[in-house]
Length: 111
Length: 113
Image 1 (cartoon, each protein chain N blue to C red):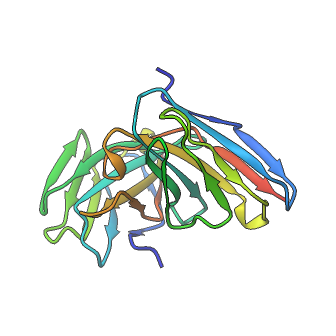
Image 2 (image 1 turned 60 degrees about the vertical axis):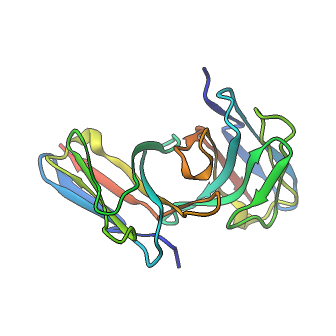
């Protein structure tokens, strides 16, 4: 059982549609990061959210941190083929020096 | 800057063989870590280091050793390879510890037969 559960595991949509990826836990995190990974490469950071209820926007991507800092979501508006990739959430606890990753959501945007 | 580099990119081992995965960074980051990535399981932390001479275990340390003699290098050693260690291995570094942005290398794809 993973500490951070991501859903869905796989999402296939048409260009122009919207999508939401969820990252849930029963634990509280001091901050949560979202990464995108393309085939054959390492993950690259998209955003970090640190305050409960925080909403951050990155062009067509909207990230939200839950009020209780146990969950987060990533919403993509009008998805494009360039948004295709593996999206990973990762949580950091207040104490310690470890980052815990979710299982990932694979997104495929078809033209 | 090259960022985080990893060698080799691909490796095939027989069960019982040993090898070292190399990782180097040129960003003067104190924090470095090793993850393995398996389908549907995201990234799992193997070992990490908060500075030269200091290492600690992550979630899945069994079968792996690390050392940190310099700030730049953080090699991962497989002592006696097993098929369960077939995976993609990523090295990462950060200027803000485990809670900061992680800069990942391109990965090493390891197959143990």
